[in-house]
Length: 115
Image (cartoon, rainbow, N blue to C red; front, side):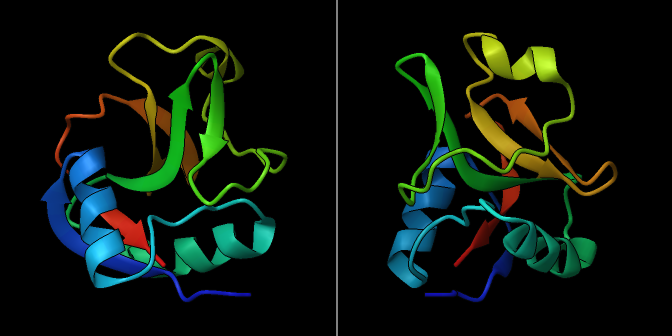
């Protein structure tokens, strides 16, 4: 099933964004394919922040999509960042300038993408 990706141009922490998406939409967006990534990139031009939260998180030693999709399709800003991110950078955001994912501090207030 394909969900429409929606940019939410208010700023929340990763958990706040997750709560908002689950209350007002379905979930934080999982960009687990080239198609969903392309769709997301078409929606982010109006974002007020350079980075937007996506539904990708590092827990128990691995990155995973909150949708349950496997992390096969990858668009990281840097390979070394994803192996063992800094303690406070365990939530992923889409960078609208580089069009890649980057680990960020989960408490940072960013715009976000819901489905």
